[in-house]
Amino acid sequence: MKVIVVGHGAREHAIAAALARSPQEPRIFAYMATPNPGIGRLVETWTEGPLENVEALLRYALAVKPDFVVFGPEVPLAAGAVDALEGKGIPCVGPRRGLARIEADKAFMREFMVKHLRRGYPRWWTFTDLASLETHLRSHPDVVLKPIGLTGGKGVRVMGRQLSGPEEALEYAQMFLEREGMILVEERLEGEEFSLMVFTDGERSLPMPLVQDYKYAREGDTGPMTGGMGSYSCADHLLPFVSREDFETALGIVEEAIARLGEVTGVPYRGVLYGQFIQTESGPKVLEFNARLGDPEAMNVLSLLVSDPLEVFASVAMGDLVEKIGFEHMATVCKYLVPSGYPEAPEVGRPFTLPVEEFAASGIEVYFASVREEAGKYLTTSSRSVALLARASSPEEAKVLLDSFLGTHCPLGLYYRHDIPRVPAN
Ligand code: GLY
Image (cartoon, rainbow, N blue to C red; front, top):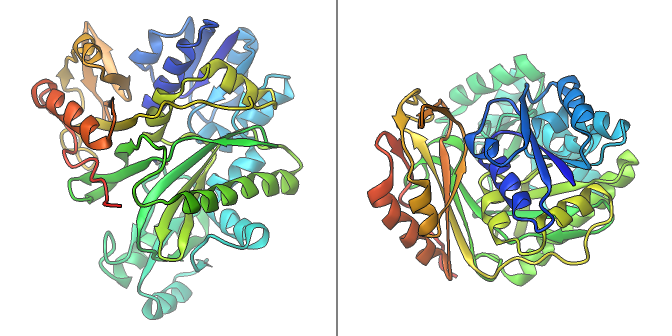
């Protein structure tokens, strides 16, 4: 089989690595906006093109003639890449544009939840002008501001955290009112967050192990938001703060979203739907839906996948999901190594080496994110450099394994969060 992987980060390296493990030995190809050395070593050919350039991706796919295409990031989904490929008879792991709105348009997402799911969301409001927003903020200070469109996971601002008060909130909102004409404001919920992702063919879905990720740049969940600094999962596939009952509640919401989205758009949702939940005193609530695998969560779950990854992805694309998907009962911890100064003032172009064989010999998996490779060395860019993953019987043990190795092998000039994971007590 021939498969094209779309995207160029550690998540897409993990997807390509999973496909490469398949006993069916698929021929793997890639469409990337910037070259990824890890993906480059797994593929037969790859091409470079902007993620939103549907025409360029379609041209590449028509030349490769893949059996199916797997999408990593949300940008091509929102641009209508799946509509274009499926229009030419090429099956995809990833939803069409109308379905991907669940991630790309947060006002649509909340309206959809109110109308079709009727549960699992905070109080929310949308604003199209600063004056009404200001009035609202004076009477509702405990809120979160969310841009409507895609922000690479970096757009959410919490009052009292990244926003010191209404003045700063209004300044932030103005930027998005000018750009998008609207801003979403939500009640601030308290609790631990978790990611629940499912593979789905639109009819049936199968859940992956739960993952908790860490979005803040610095230890103690401080500093600016990033695309994610690390994540963990537990051997029982739940999390210490999510009971079996809460998991079933969250899964019910995700499954109903898939069914209702299919009804509303008239197109089956084929791909991954990822519910970003917060565990509140009144049960799990959806913070966001994402139309793709999480990053770094993809590394946690794909590393545990014991079913044939090619068969799993192919069954999603063909609309005939496998009966069962096996995940190993082990815990995982993933950490990103990022350039010093990331994300505000990353040191770009710093050369480093990575003892990939030594990592592998210690059972640590290496997934390249954003690095340039020149003359046997890697160079940092302004984004996250490399993701590392360790597995053990508990997240605490996986952390010890990863940290002890990083203690001696973390390249100079890169940093990682030592406090990931901080596993909450049961
Ligand atoms: N882990 C956050 C995301 O993938 O959006």
